[in-house]
Amino acid sequence: MRICFATHNKNKVNEIKKLISSEYTILTLDDLNEKKEIEETEETLEGNAFLKAEYIFNKYNIPTFADDSGLEVTALGGKPGVYSARYAGIKKNDKDNINLLLKNLKGKQDRSAQFKTVIAFIDNNNQKLFQGITKGHIIEKPRGTKGFGYDSVFIPDQFLIDDIQKTFAEIDIENKNKLSSRSKAVNKFVLFLNIMN
Image 1 (cartoon, rainbow, N blue to C red):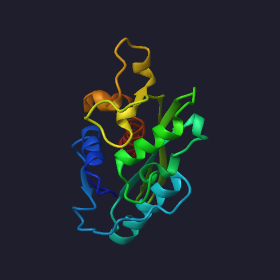
Image 2 (image 1 turned 180 degrees about the vertical axis):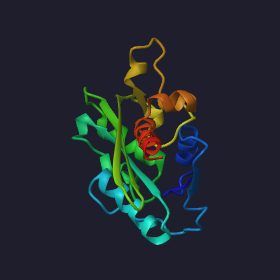
Image 3 (image 1 turned 90 degrees about the horizontal axis):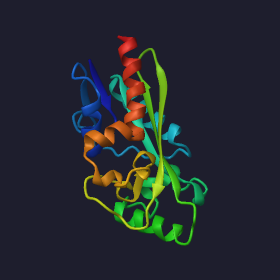
Image 4 (image 1 turned 45 degrees about the vertical axis):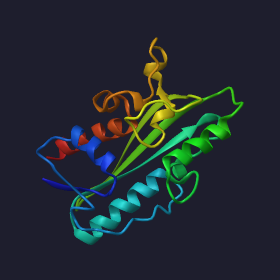
């Protein structure tokens, strides 16, 4: 079965392909030769995920899923949230986003946070949303080189109770996939696909 993942982000595609069964052929926007960067204009993660999935489904008539993820920091009232990718500006620069986040958290005692991922899926018969959440803690300086986005400053709760406290950017993708909000949302999506088929 061919399904489009409405993204140009190769990091996301690599993560997803490790989670979804090989019986599904995952096409990306690059595979469809879709050059347009679908603008995320909604005020919620759910709205942005649905907007992207709907655009591609309507244009190509192929079952499509899209995601939107955000880092929600307690001391910042849930920010950056839906604006996580462009927190420090429209250039969507990971380093700039992290620097602004750490600046805004300076002096804050509560450094709890959560990653939230929402996946929207659309085909001829369905419009579904799947959500995953990973709770954790923001450290004061980035550590690790394996991740992307805010991974280098986020320690998931499961690693906070360890003697070795590792950020998402310090663990391999297999272990990250056991804990990440994206993997939790994708696992719910895959269960749905299996039931549907």
